[in-house]
Image (tube, rainbow, N blue to C red):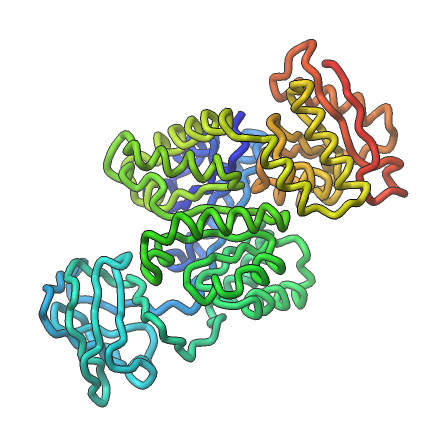
Length: 470
């Protein structure tokens, strides 16, 4: 049973319910929808299918919506792909024009006013590079430094320039309201550049009386790195979006930044996620490259909570096979994790309170006794999250009477949550815990640790652990 969570982005290649079912059966933990490419009708269709499959398969696959954020997008082109040639000149207009090899417009209509000469612009994942060499009344005149293919709705990165774009557009606000109305578990905020922007979304959720939707901050630019500690502090988790980071920063810096952010999240007890080009060759190939396998494995060895598939499952030819192989990589890599090192690092950053001490002891003993599972009845998910932070070698089975808690735990490393009616006695808790353990293929004679807070209505922290043999 893998412990690293797989987030699969849903698109044309995976929107059919039979494909969604196969993704779910083979290891998808979160179904992600990128609002840059989707509308609410598509979202509603996918959410309905996922929840139907959850009920049918007794699964807890959650939903993540990516809020589009203050992105500058290339406007309409006269054909699907336009090729720009190195050395040519091209105009970028404020007003709408139909683009071609000589011109295009963008979604932001004050670009000419705010972008200075000699500014570098990048698009197509940084492969196409433009330099502003002059300005006209209604257009930027650019030289193509590196040519290549551009497409409609490609992001246009303007380096070292802060544009006067509101962080949340009206559509972004509608997306957040839609997420609230449809009980979406995770919101991923694109193009975060400050902790203040995370707070804007948090304030919106407070106004909606929503205390269940989790905020994931996507780190995609250098400004976000400058405030990374504060962003981590006020978010539920962080997604390292290596694509845009690699456009804004020298690509050789990305591995070190990835490790730094994973480590910071681990110390802060926050979820860390790695995204972009994890197995992109599988958009066309039935097998990943060795480099991609090593990339996924290294993120897992560093202790990341989740990994993201993008084009592989949205437009790729082999979405189900990609999930299968990523699950195998996760299971194999998890065997090689230095769990004692992660446990030691986590304990150094933890508060010295009862819950932390019990959680630490549970994980340490579970490893020493080779326990097959840690079982924790929980209402809020606090105990399960705390144990996940200490990275046990065995899975964590969380039992909760709160369906929202069950779904929110789907992103936490090693946690498999299950709904159960409220438990009102210690004996019943023990009986149900051992019964549920058998549902996860534990065998007679296997050791498990049961932990939680007791008495249930009086104690709000973890205060006991009990070792049981199945």
